[in-house]
Image 1 (cartoon, rainbow, N blue to C red):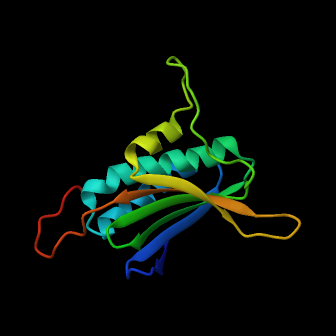
Image 2 (image 1 turned 45 degrees about the vertical axis):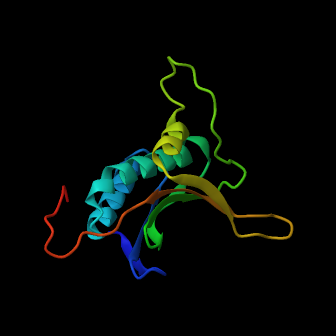
Length: 155
């Protein structure tokens, strides 16, 4: 089950840590949808699920990390952040050119197209070893939660 933690804006944050395998991608999507629905942001649930899906897939495919942490938070009023945390700080995300007939390689292009902003943060530091990991994140600008008495959407 996801762990709920208080966030600075008063909304709980949600996170799970899973093995870095393809089955974890669906759990990440589910967590994003549940968080968006809990916040009354039903209309943004599928976009959040798509974004976290791509970030988690990249962590699984392009790093040697054995575990990935999935985080869904409200860092400020009007914003939702989804993030995938791994222990591979030297494997940084970057947009790359993709052949039209390639079967993969478009994940960050989708993130770039659907997120209002995205990036990564290096985590921790040590004088000799440097950071221990990174958080790849995407943010959505959201209008606000459903008001009491309003009809619910897809959640």
